[in-house]
Length: 305
Image (cartoon, rainbow, N blue to C red; front, side, top):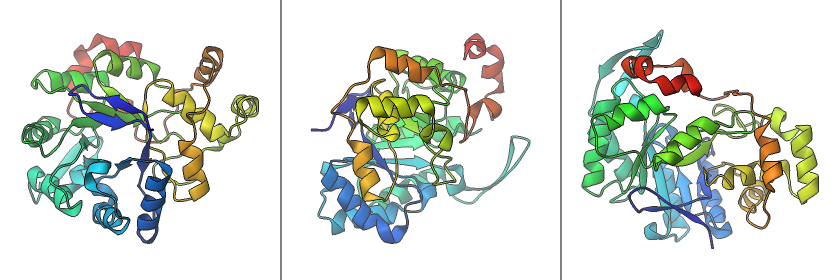
């Protein structure tokens, strides 16, 4: 039986999820069917991925009931704006409402509700986006709502005007970028953490050689009789963090989910922690203060991160 994490509103999310970004559409149905067979119950998508219709089709083709899976999707600003950035300033031309983007995801996924809906980045118009997300949450169309790549000042900004605290914060976590302070902040504030981009840049399907060829991780793989990938995923798993690795290779799918039959020692967890370099290969929120300047300037805790 797969483990679940209870979110701050009581909704339970499977801890081991399945990412779908960049999976070829012609492989998606077979891949999701195989993933479900292996035990995956959470599927992560987004409007920006352009595969929500294919995921709905895949569930039907594989005879998977909607109520038997947990679906995460996300709002990306390009869904409602034609946008252009210069020096972190957004120049945009609105062509449809934020609400209509949410409704399109529900329609494309062929569902009355989405289990978890995330704001894909800390956008300048975060307040408006969060208010519309909150209305869908209150209506029950989103069972839980959260954010991606938000730092404490971003979350404090939301808390300053909304009683609805994000249920999840999805951000990059890897041995090269352990994000301990951000993880602690989220967990101390009742926000579940979800790891993304653990092995590769989001625009590159090739795994990071710095991780797969790391001497310490190779030695731990040998010690536990597991792969380096499994060691890293188990390291994240033992921090009570949600996982969403992606692949359409069946052997790797099985490898990714087969991490519950061993446990890393406290000493080995710390040894992996020591690999941290604060190295981002994905979106780096520390370099983009879009729309939150006043909170960055006044939030003293940022300097400790």
